[in-house]
Image (tube, rainbow, N blue to C red; front, side, top):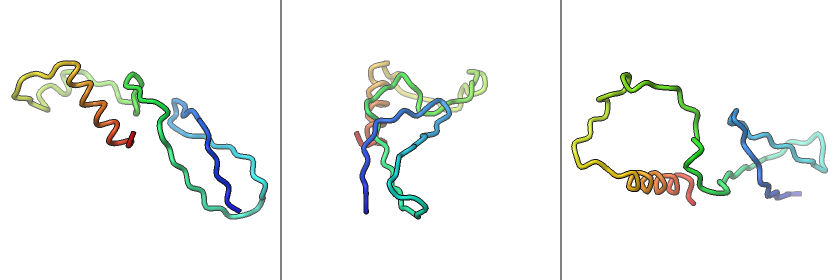
Length: 88
């Protein structure tokens, strides 16, 4: 017997999804498939925790020789990449 569940969950700061489901069967091997889809796009919350870095450690590592992008252009590019990565 196959069961489908649709839940809205929260992944905590530890980055681990805790999934507790009451099951009618016990002592049985199961194949479990999990599909994760963000409920909304939020660019204010980082997807991954980053190690603090000082500008002196990275200055000059990615030279850019063109017209500077505006904040709006950078935000649009980040949003587009997020949508491609998450297929939203």
